[in-house]
Image 1 (cartoon, rainbow, N blue to C red):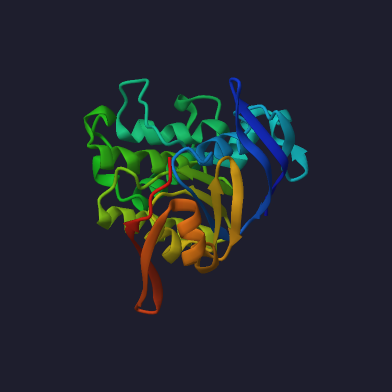
Image 2 (image 1 turned 90 degrees about the vertical axis):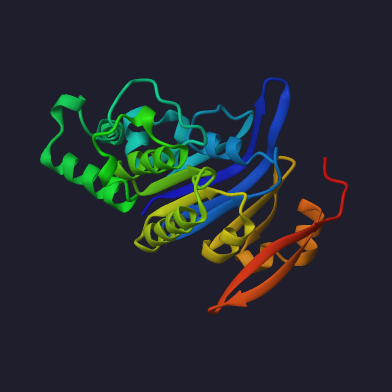
Length: 261
């Protein structure tokens, strides 16, 4: 089981401080949602946790070691990352694209073992894209490509998965499927961190939420506590309707209160 500890983390982009005083800990076996208004610092937090941004102050520890000091291959085997933007640098088939997730484990794509191919197959089946394996990745729809990129991250089979807005390009059917998948991965013992804007899915599927505003964590804990009416009004400047369906809570943002810039 892997633990990530964030201590007094400050991050600046250029001359602008984007994160300030972040303190939290993440351990295996939970689906953690990071939510907050646009510009709150959610994606910056994910990149800092991956060692992709150098802290202005504080540190990120991966099992006690500063994440920025780890060898890139070791870090990549431990933390799989699904970025927000899907950029294709080569004209590859979807199978080849998903295969890139095995690079932390192999010396080159011409050296895939049967175990690597099995991991790729499992990832594609999980993301429900096996039927697209031979298609060129550049010909896929936005939603199909989004699931392909998720499969690439799953193929790493890392104990930690960071997914930055993985459902942004998906229709409701596949968005629910991806959230179910992420919850199942978390319950199997992996840690899954997911950046979300959909508060209904965050409330329904996540075990824990970090609510960010202005580069700080303003609330952390069980979803129903973090998304309580007063907290939602103060952070998002909206009123919402709450309810239960099949024993699970839901939330529908309903009315703007104004004042959010």
